[in-house]
Length: 84
Image (cartoon, rainbow, N blue to C red; front, side, top):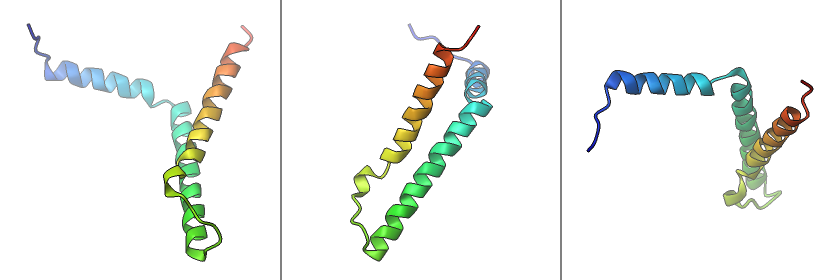
């Protein structure tokens, strides 16, 4: 038997979820990833136009993913060895 959700309760759940996600630290991480993605796209576009480097456009998102992994690992290590 399916239960019906109130629109207000769904809205409250969404607002709570967004409030948990939109912290200052998360905003910095998103801005860092967007900057990395923008720089890698700019570098790929310029090098493609000048003929300096052949770019495989399928792997253009790898630098942004590497930055995310570094941030996640750094945060995990910092939290693990935090003095109480």
